[in-house]
Image (cartoon, helix red, strand yellow):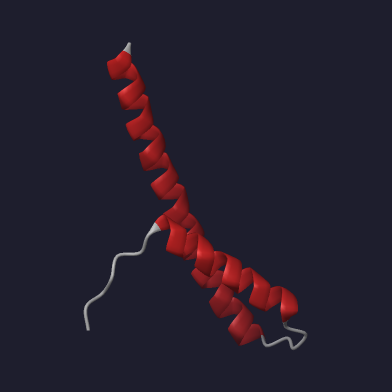
Length: 66
């Protein structure tokens, strides 16, 4: 099985899914919550990195226009 590269859109969708699951689950299972929070942290870091890279690219493009 090949590992597919995660996209920003997929990461945001997964974050939204995790949030919905946590909000809609009345049962408190600390192991599951901990797992989901860890995954959310990884996804948020990925999204943050993607946004910073995009910002850098846009700044370079704007500088080239000047």
